[in-house]
Image (cartoon, rainbow, N blue to C red):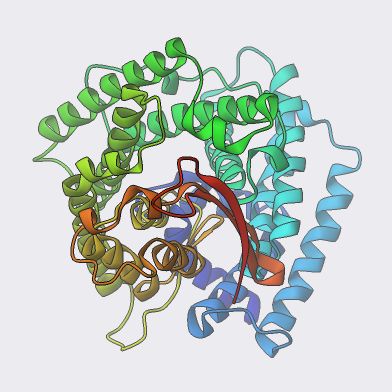
Length: 445
């Protein structure tokens, strides 16, 4: 039966990919348990797995096809049953019946490349989820707490990615309640890689939303990106990052002998993010009075180290997940991974070899990490390199790219359904200019 085959594919491949480099109880077991008694969620999983199988084989969902015709029938059944269930649903005790299918629908729309629908769904689900949190009982069962935290982790991650995709002004200024959780407390040593990841994401989401508020208040992308918050806010996040880094290093030492291979991979992903955040926050702490892009050159070794770790991870995960082939199958996950950091390195690091290695990895290992698409990120980064190095002659090191040629405040606003991005950045017109002028251009593919 097609349904049985699809559910088997979900169990064997889709669930593990959605979890990424980490283990996720919701995708590995939780959603399948809910599907055992909720027909709508079962139909949704069948649709998702069917589309995922085609996505792996073809690298994109081509419409129409026999495979996704079956998937779309299942998808419509899932939507219909979901609407019937939530019509008279009391969310106070059944939030999983609403959120679980919506996360599946978000994955399906991502895989179909319909990111307008994804953004709408993310906002809608967040509104419902936050409404639930505002009126949720103060004491819930342990199983309910675990499920709620899994939902929140997925939703907050998607929100942070959405802000990066469409820009903080387009997303809007939205203050959100949060589940009372241990993630806000940083211990001396994290007891697991998962807890280290959750803690990092908790503060990253808090930071992202605070900057969304700042951007909307200032109504100026460039100023907001260069002058992030006041001195007290900068000090707060520097302190949080230092404590997180200490707890993360202690965890790696304490658990070095007991970590599984998956734990080691996950820890290396976090190390890539740590290196990126360290360079950003260190530069931020210096708070230069002028926008001097040459300061990024001090972090070339960190960028090179992060790219090497990412390369090793991608090679290992590719070798384990697919049969030998000249073409790498695309990877689909909702978890944080390497696409965002590699993109940041490609446009911040001016060493011609390091930034091209980052772009090469984005192209060679096609990955969709939530809303981050590695191929689209590579195209944007490639364009930034062309802008900065154009007309300079041979570029053999970062010092060959003068400050006037460098871009700042790079912000690509993706319109994925129309296969284009509006790239905004600031750049001096020549070596004799004193001010970086805002520039906007359209990249199509």
